[in-house]
Amino acid sequence: MIKRELQKKLIALAKKYPIVTLTGPRQSGKSTLLRDSFPNYKYVSLEDPDMRQFAIEDPRGFLATYPNKTIIDEAQRVPTLFSYIQTHIDSEGKEGIYLLAGSHNFLLMENISQSLAGRTAILKLLPLSHKELSKAKTLPKSVDEEIFMGGYPRIYDKQIAPTDYFPFYIQTYVERDVRMMKNIGDLSKFIRFIKLCAGRIGQLLNISSLANECGLAVSTISAWISLLEASYICYLLKPDYNNYAKRLIKTPKLYFYDTGLACSLLDIRTPEQVSTHFLRGGLFENMVINKFIKSAYNNGEEPNLTFWRDSVGNEVDLLQNINGKQYAYEIKSGATFSPEFFKGVSKWAKLSGTAPQECFVVYSGNKEIISSAGKLITWWNLNK
Figure 1 (tube, rainbow, N blue to C red):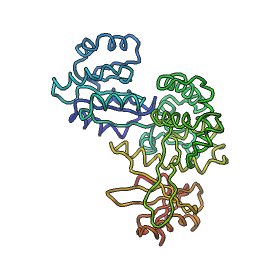
Figure 2 (cartoon, one colour):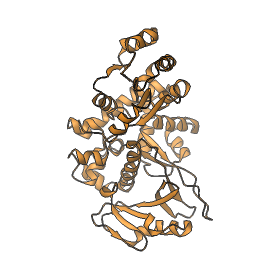
Figure 3 (cartoon, rainbow, N blue to C red):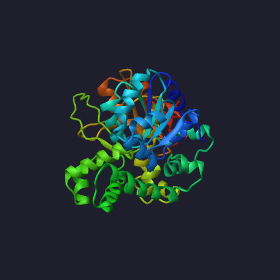
Figure 4 (tube, helix red, strand yellow):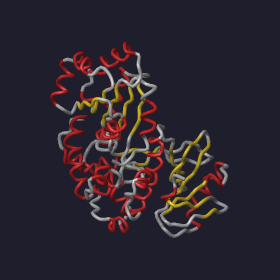
């Protein structure tokens, strides 16, 4: 098993809360992490029809059978159980009673907000990060290969080719998870919709354009975008609203939580295809931003990230807010440095009054330099 960065935070919070909830995409390693971190806990999966029926028909009996130190996987499958869990943990008055896991963020959080607010810590586990792969000595050989392979643990643990893994993942997700969360009659249209989203990776979200290409209403596309967010397929990076005397774009940008999944949806079948693909820049940008997202979640924090673009096209790919201070990152997929790389961050720094030491360009090359406009850093050295 590849060690997960989140493990330390997970164990610490289980000593402070009666419940710790772990959410994230399907097959990101939630159950494996919980069972490895808490080997003395019992494990129950509500995916099991018998266990699910037991919890539905006799919730008191279920909790009497598993009164303490239990991992309950896919907990959102039995929404009625949450109220009984609340009563039980309140009467027990202890920490570390239950560890809940689920891959449907919307369903899980809806139940938590109704019954377990203030009683649970909530953590998110995404696919493997570059840092985790590096520590496990299983890093892909190149930046294009890392984009292509993504970070789902089974690909690395079982040495499954991405071309074998992702088509089945997409099929399972659509046929099982999507139908559980929303009644979609024509699944082929939904698959087309996801593929169209992959084709817009790193771009401003244009719901009207998606609706036209799918032949669906704007309201339907909006609902489907929310569905992709709730199941950790996609996320929206929001624009920064500090005006700096310029009209700003107020539309979010669309990214995928895993670039390997995006490559599969784009019908990219080899790392070599990534290097020449017209969306290579967007895929590289997505991978870099995912490093920030994973770093925050692995520390038990919410990522405080935005981007900046004005109405005349000046742009900074990523702004990170740390303790009230903003750091700017321009992301370039090229391996050869050009002074033009700093054009966007320099414009933003001048408007915002930000010092050069808070401005960065992340690129796919190997050399790092410090210039008067900011620092050039390599993508793989980003966490340092």
